Length: 512
Image (cartoon, rainbow, N blue to C red):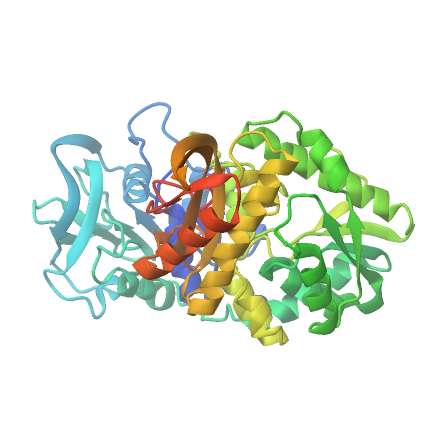
């Protein structure tokens, strides 16, 4: 029996990924798809319900994104949010227009009638509005279930079919009972089951890996991070001796990284892994390169070249396994017409168009917190599951500007001090990710009554659950002072340390 599946059709909302998070938190599997999907694709993929996201367009504009009209003939449960509501209303004959009284921010919801979408929802509950258009006329067979403080339609429901439209955003925390409203749609209207569990995923992933790989072999790219480590255990459980684990030193690793990773994966996880040193090739390809997108693409190409070269020694190897996560895919590839690529992850946007190896990416629909839960189910040690994320491009995206051996040395030493102090203070486990960044600037300082003109290091620590959003960590003043003092005293070439207090958004977690 297959798991329940929801598709979220993305019309460009800044909150689309947050909708996906909320659905996954309810233990229902969902994926984000483009407005170009067809009714036939939805039918053949056995999708059980649809959510139409918000978006910046106006439905009455000629260039506004549309849907295959046959989708509404499938008689699936559909939840339209903001633009999604307006698109649904327009499809069924309503008039949507721009209003001089736009609604942005908090608004009180006034309930007009009983409906399953409003089960356990209080009258006058607070919701979050973000729209300049609204539904002016109600289409046939629909009713208004609730209005905003301005009297504008806030919830529209069909009299006979499982169609619901919300003019507000239930996925954001500012909508006080938003999770309950989504819960009502998932379980009372769509009548789904909460079957998106780690054990269910493992069962289906093993079955899928065996079917995909057949009698061939898999080269597993292990970095020592959470994602690749859990992937290694999963694939080994699925196909046993058909997988070969490799670790590539790209010259962009943290201090003592290769030795620590290989020992951990061998001793604590029982993975037979072999290390390869390709640092000279990577650093040669990156020489003189400062643009972050170019860095990522170069690193992606170099990784593939290295893996394909290694695979030549194993004729039965046909697949390359990567620990690619859903945020990597979302941020690297636009899923909608007007959207922007945030950054090309080396293992997605940095891959060459033609490869000799086929990709095996069992986690490319998962968020990091979901991978950690799956790892726990697989018995992966907590020390590995709680390890901070480390980007595939390594220190290349933590050195702003050109990468040189000298700059790598400075950053490695500063970063090692920061992480060591976090461990000793007990704060390593309290933050989601922490690291140092080397800036391409120098500042004047005074050491021993002498003028210095040396590099600047930025300390970055954030709290997050999935990497899609993050808040900066409020580390103790004494801890930051101790880290800064050690760095400027112990790392010759750095005379200034600053702390990054930017959240995501508007920034990203990594600097490049």
